[in-house]
Length: 138
Image (tube, rainbow, N blue to C red):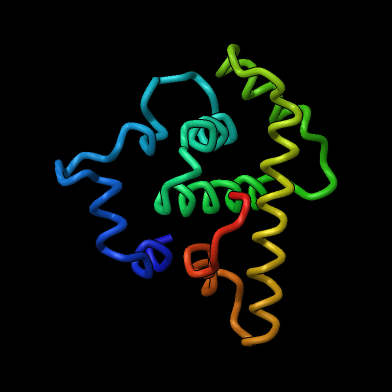
């Protein structure tokens, strides 16, 4: 993650922080004090991000990538959906949103792994691609 942040421009970081030294509230995934676990925290962070701004898009990509990495392939999403519904009871269409996030994360995982096979570098060294690649749906 540190490498990913290091590859992003200072100007984008300054816009996210807003010159005040404090993180933009939309990017603060700990705000709100919900009682959920890691999936609920990541889900909430994704829901709070505005897709139109470059830095927010980067965070959304990273969160979707992390969400997909944490979910064990071939296992049910039911525990994740329950965790989110328990922590964030006002969220609607949770299951569909979880599947959408997992699809986006899987796409980014595939991109990182494909590039790794071409460059012969481990995927962990290539997550900076998430901010280098052009605009997409997330």
